[in-house]
Length: 315
Image: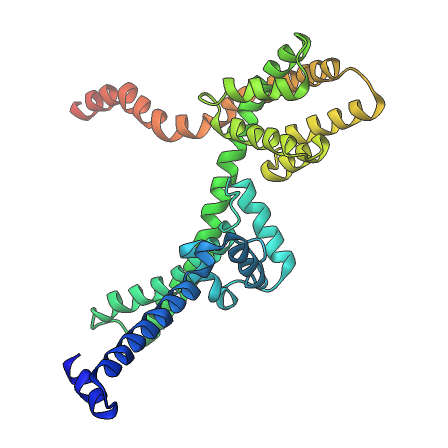
């Protein structure tokens, strides 16, 4: 600062003028720094502009949100997100079936797949490189297997999650439907019945309660009830819910009693569940043949024939 004052004093005749010049320079620097900070945090202070920039920079995956970690992935999404819209739609549907309803789930799925495809071959190279007896051909085969596993593991895990979640929803749906029937016959509207069932099943059946809660939220937001129910089918993929939505759509179209429709569908669903239980019980005998033959039969033969064989061996 003193050097700057001496330099400006040499250029300016009066010392007071040099002091004012230093003040102006410092003020200009602070002003420029403030403008830079404002432009840097412009999206943070302006949510409308932030959302507008997210929509512009979305690229081929417009259904992905742009939060702090996802925005960094979004900049490089073209490297690992496929451009095939049918494939993206099919993957999005599978993610919905698995319970991943957030918009950034699609981006995270492909990011995890790409990370595994890079990380697993790298780990194989490190581990197999520490073993001197492994040949180059085996090393190359191990890298290819690791690359294939990195590509298939996310899809395999997602399929398992889909099967597990659909079984949970399918098992909990008859109980929830019985509650909807009771609420409807008691005089509640369909929306009020769904709200009541969502509240009551939040602890016992959280997966189905969350899905019904989304339906209620969409209906309150102005979405048509039939469309909200169809979205429920798209998010779950359960055939029983699809049948209920079709029955409700026909009831609304022809003006029939919704409570009667729900009661008839509940009876059919209860009969279907009983038939499924009877079918599973009929298969138990066939399924027990192999465990009995492999595990129990050898032990039974040893217990029965063992003493006899010992007696004959002493004769």
